Length: 332
Image: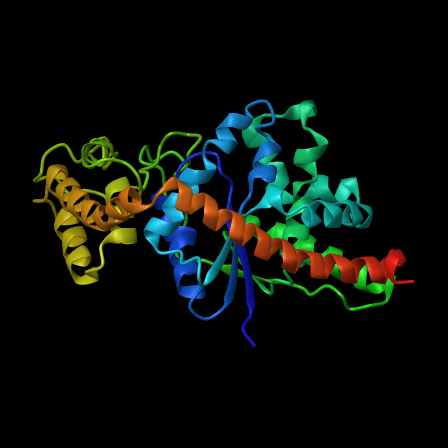
């Protein structure tokens, strides 16, 4: 039997190259051999954007357009909107009884995000409890594989703790544990070199960026501040241009040669930025072309159909959960 995969993105803006190397490319491979559910997590995005819902709702179609343009196939992957599957929220309500507030507060991922977003004492219950919502998302489809970055591993741990506690308390192995799949590609650094590429930080190259915008962003990248002249020896470590060449230049022999020449001296920043620009433009050109061919009406139809399929799968799990708890009143 095929294994089930649950993955997705928060619709708070278009997708960028960090998404592409970290999660999109693995999904394209996974969908060929597994049953994939790709969730547009609008409800989760609301947890820290509740006062700006348009940021979310206006991004849904764009994110889906990006999916289709890079190769997510709706005949192989079920692409759906989280808020259109109410069974997920019913599961969340049951799971909230199976995890303590202290456990959620200790979660390293949540702690890190609280610091990053500077919530302090103003954190909402919805944000604090979003790992429980994620547990519902994963278990609703009985996903056994969840692609994540290493910073998301604690969220999968919480999911499996809830699964074990549910099955133990209610005496039935209704829910299944999930295995985290770590990307073999490190997180892509932002174009400013100061953090990972991020929509909110504005330091990313988006899949939908024009040729000129991509060129400008690459030309603004940090290299080695001590590499003033082409003849000066340069550092590859911490050099944003080489970080992107590592991720996107397929010819590793050429990459090794560029690094060697740069470190010895004799290779200017303008040259390596030109090579990176050519590499990224070649990658994005067919993606941009496919974006222009996708109609909004087709996207909406696909999302409705995908959400119906997702809801049917989640409803089956919820029915089993109700029976295990003893809430199957209509069957008695």
